[in-house]
Length: 151
Image (cartoon, rainbow, N blue to C red; front, side):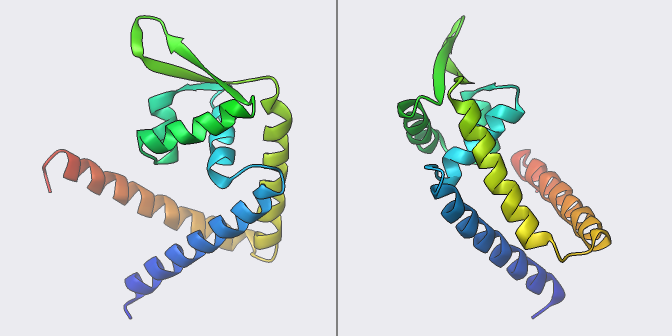
């Protein structure tokens, strides 16, 4: 196996395992990984975001996001607000009740990061982060080229 293939395989495996463990730990707080990620993104966006922007940040299609938002709305954690002048757009807003849930989700997430990464030296993490940023930039570049038809 080439080094590139080994890197991509390891990255995929780590991502899948991280998501599986993160989801299992979040379920103890009554949330799924998808709902937790949405809550954290909304919180990091100042408490609200346009529905289309949230879908993009979560890398999900509209029907998937609608189901996820339905669940958060049933829990009283978000509300959908129509955007004036655009009947097709919604602003997704965290409710006051979401604050405690966001804190719990963040706490669970931080505890997992600490347990998984505690034995990795800081310099190694910094190197890994630089590599991941380079890969992400290249993927963005390639995605822009493909979308623009410049292949």
